[in-house]
Length: 357
View (tube, rainbow, N blue to C red):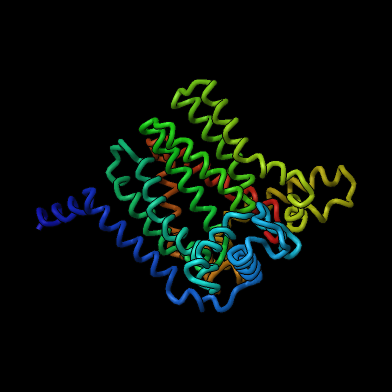
């Protein structure tokens, strides 16, 4: 019996066994994200309608709803939308027509592809590790993401955030791959994917800047890359972001932030009061994203953002979070530790600036 169990364990831990399980998990993820997606959730919400309207206008006329030919920024409902998701919907409409499925398809595909991307990221992070329990981490990570409530929910709607997350995971995967094989084309693919996140969803204007800083620090400290190469990366990244940077400094580019900023209520207060109230407000908002209530019970209580009656994670996952903290404390694989802590630190930063928190 022990020999049989050993053979089964070996077969699952082999590259072929892991690949079979990953394919199965990805198919499961696709099914959870595609099942009756045109009617669940029922109807398109206001942002999906705006995205679909502009995408259909691009397909049929080559212009947005305001008559601008192939714009980089789409004016809609008192704000400006990022271009990537709208143009992806346009491509889907050429195949699927003017349907709910076409509006949601980029999110479905991005959510499904995020599963193998996360598997690849964790696999690269644990390369050469000798800790036996770490061998299960990539496939467990892929499975948990595939069935996680928040990811299923956002993958089933026309949310730009899902596509931006997929770009971000692709960037991180390619960066780790570069650190392994040192091919410059892979590194520039990572930089391009990171730049695309900012043209997909607003919060990545902040996240991308912290991430490129982390990339440069690691390339300098661990990869021992020359200063001239690091400067070249900075110049290339700024070049890719130049339209976004110029847009962000305009009144149109700051309009969304002014609408959702949690600090807007303090603008009429004396400067000294703002000096201590704004940091306290930000810290309070930031810490709430790690609260048990937010993660496991009620979420942010916005019905458009979550499955009713369910938090972002299943309550049973709380035990795994505790186990993960213990493993982080004991972890010998420093690269994995730094990446996890870095992502945990960066993730809530943009949201902590906004209301409702």
